[in-house]
Image (cartoon, rainbow over all chains, first blue to last red; front, side, top):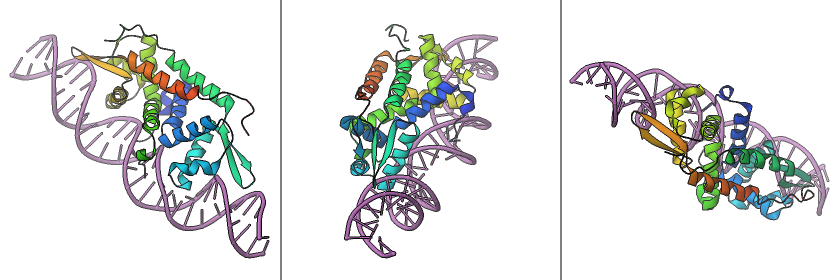
Length: 110
Length: 110
DNA sequence: TTATTATATCGTAATATTGCAATGTAATAA
DNA sequence: TTATTACATTGCAATATTACGATATAATAA
């Protein structure tokens, strides 16, 4: 029904799904890549070069902030965004925990 | 409008978002973890131990199959599922490309 | 004070996702 | 042949997401 039955799953499973959701839109990937490339504080208006309306970008930025992946700092009239180093490492390890949970035995697949 | 403007983004960005979407639901995380843990072919009905209806599980399995993350093989009357080794490595590298795109300079964040 | 500038939030329309009952299908069993 | 068993698919209701115009807010400029 469009509603996820979160109570059926472990906190870890819900967490991972929640983080993955942050990456599950090309605009948010683009924003993240932009911040990675600059590896610095990026003025918000630069992000609007994506071709989406200002309100839409702002909404995507909020979602990224909610997962903790990025941090926004008030810089006078404008905003500065950057990757959150601590959270980034955390998320990276969280994902690698999944990815490294598989050893390619090459013959274990039917 | 619930519709993603894919044409605004690169193929890489759309790809990554598409893969992330596969991980963006706790039931699909649970299925993946189950296959990882077994590291073998798992009979489909085991997966229904998740507490969701058979139709719902089947739908999640289809999504995982569509991203290529898992493979299903007909085993008489039942089905066998497993992680797709080649695709798994591919996806892992795809994600690590993003994760490793960040060097923690620790002081580059405002 | 009144602009202006940058961004956030609200409201809403369009589309997507989630979940499941009911039904379809395909292989085997009786 | 008619069950039965194991999934897949269909159809639909409920909720979520995406997008954006309009508007609010908050800081600075004039």
